[in-house]
Image 1 (cartoon, protein in one colour):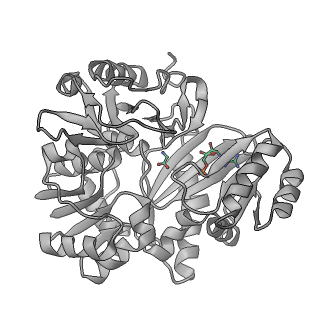
Image 2 (cartoon, rainbow, N blue to C red):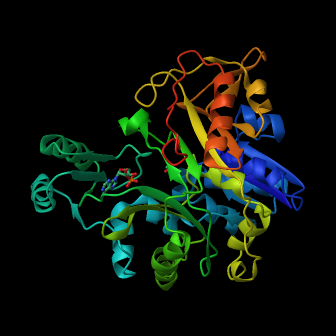
Length: 420
Ligand code: AMP
Ligand code: GLY
């Protein structure tokens, strides 16, 4: 099977790596990819958010399967265009990707499917926002309705700050005000062909920039799997109470959802609640989930791209190993990342036992003498081991081998789960 992976982050590098490991895969091409993927697979330049361009590239390469990593291409209709051109595609249609693209739409679908989530008001005026804030009380949760790369949500005790964020969001669309959910957050990726659902191993992401969950929200600074503290039947609960009802509701509406339904959940004192849906794999959770997957990845992704096929796919197998990933970010991330810094020690990091480096915002230096940073999240170092403590040691040992002037990373990823 020839597979084309769309995107350029560490999530896509993880997908490329897992596909290259799969004996059923003959060739993997990344588009546009990054410096890391270019070392292991051919990379093709493409505007990932241009549906016609991606469909044409897939045809030109003769790809048997296109795997779309990020949300923006999905919301732009890349999966629709690829399928219309006759190529199988892992990823939802634009109509189904609205589960991520509009928080108000996701709330409506959850209400129709009786899926547990935070109570919410969709507001179009400041007065409605003020009423909703008072109805729910502090801490206040205010969300931009549309895609905001993880930066559209403000959680605060400060009513004025909540109102100020709502005013900014209202300039371009509706705003969602929610009740606050207490309890730890988990990410469960549910693979689906639009009919059946198979969950991947749960993971936890660290969204704040600084140790101790301080600092601003980011795209994610690290992750680990498994979650020793979570209920043993968590994935099963999410399939039954969240993913299957949502997939059935989307099919009933004539806009079946296929690909991966990323269920972001809070395990609250009152039970499991959906915080958000994404229509794609999470980054950096994918880096740890795929490090633990023992089954060949291409089969299950192709089954999701083929309506009705997932039911007959063999059950997924998992490694006993735990995995931890730590993100190295550019100085100034997330507000104003400085790019162009030289990266050193990448080979030493890869040589650490149980560790591997996945690139994100990296590029080959213009003079061909190495790798430089080109984005906010520069790379993800993944460590695996018999337990979380050993996986953590491998990840941090590898990270300490990498050099980037002013590079930022959290030192407490998976620390409490590992008993560190
Ligand atoms: P979202 O973009 O909806 O995932 O929100 C980003 C982050 O804001 C989440 O990962 C949570 O940490 C936090 N958050 C979102 N909604 C709530 C909520 N209702 N209660 C508490 N925290 C929330
Ligand atoms: N790790 C959060 C996300 O992928 O949205």
